[in-house]
Length: 93
Image (cartoon, rainbow, N blue to C red; front, side, top):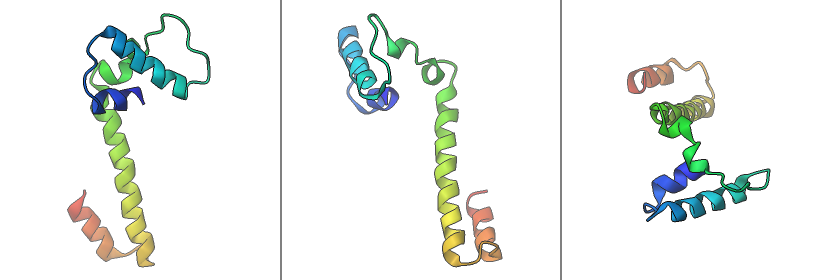
C-alpha cells in the first residue's frame, strides 16, 4: 500500500510529510499498534533496494495474463483447443 501511495501521489515535501503518509498507511493495514520512531519507508527494501521492483511487478502481470488466457480456454469449452493454444503461443510466448 505504501509503495502504491508513494508512486501514485505527489512527492512528499519533507520527511515529516513522508512520515505522516507512512503512518496513515500503517494504521490502516497493520495488525499491531504503531511503535514510536518506526520508519516503514526506510525498511521497505525489497522494492527500493536491489532492483527487485521490476521482478515483483512482472510476477503480478504474469498472474493477470495467466488468468486471462485460462479464461479464454475455459470459455471456449475446449481447454485443449489447438487454435487457442497456437494464438497463445504466437501472441504471448
